[in-house]
Amino acid sequence: MSFFVELWESVFTPGTTPALITATHASFILLIISLLVLIFLTKSIHFINLLVIAVLLYASVFWFINELQQVKLQSNNELSQKELEKESESEKLSANATESSQTTATSEDIKLRKRKV
Image (cartoon, rainbow, N blue to C red; front, side, top):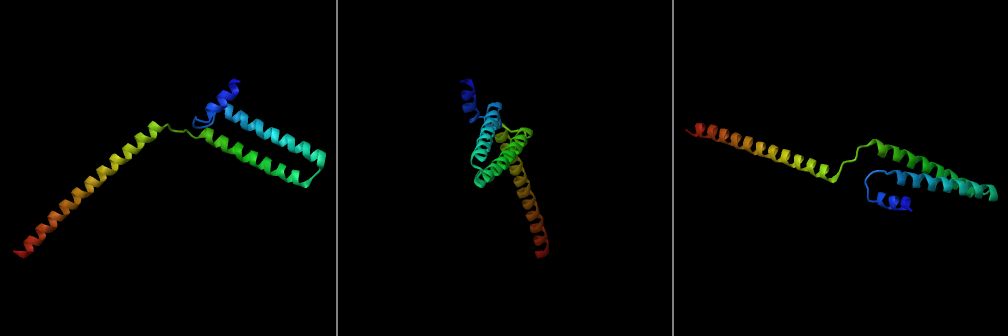
């Protein structure tokens, strides 16, 4: 029974967990086995097509799981900290831009005053 509890808890955990991977592989293997049995019993082209679709879907899910395991997932705290750093950098840049525009405006004012005199 602990496998099902672990599987349920893996729904709320970011990334992939061993229970989720095991359940995914088991469900696809059972699907493929049942389709093979149906192909053997009925020899229907429809079940062959479904088997091809299931195998391709299983391959793509397997690839996606491997890609997720290679990527380092970040927690919410890390993401919010990065957002705060980006906001502070953008505020500094905007403050520098307004200061430079003010100094530019004052130098232009000086040039205009010199011309008037």
